[in-house]
Length: 116
Image 1 (tube, one colour):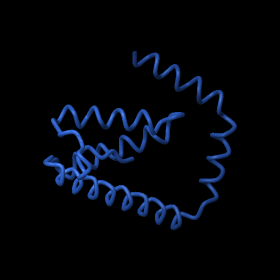
Image 2 (cartoon, one colour):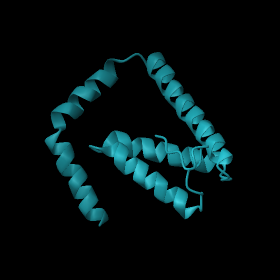
Image 3 (tube, rainbow, N blue to C red):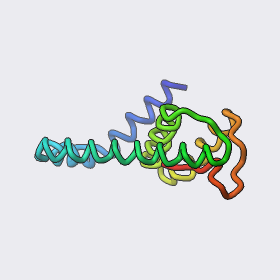
Image 4 (tube, helix red, strand yellow):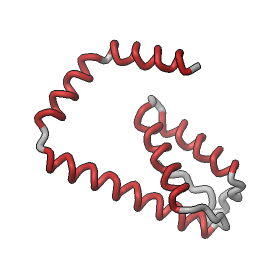
């Protein structure tokens, strides 16, 4: 299966090579301090989202660590941004992760609130 995923990634990269070349040029001309500020801001945003989701889950009776919630947020965000219709896949994956950890279904008070 991993060979198929690698082959698919290579085919997509070849198909989108002009986009990748353009993106590389843009990154190469960007100022490093602006890239650092953007990366820091994105990391802070994801940390805030993880903290918020953890608080909402606690209101619903779930006790998950901030690290675990943070990893789920980053993974769901990556899927949402990488796939067409990725937000739906990310939400379904995150709900599955919550179910695996026996998080009670939401009742309007914050349980099982997907983010990403």
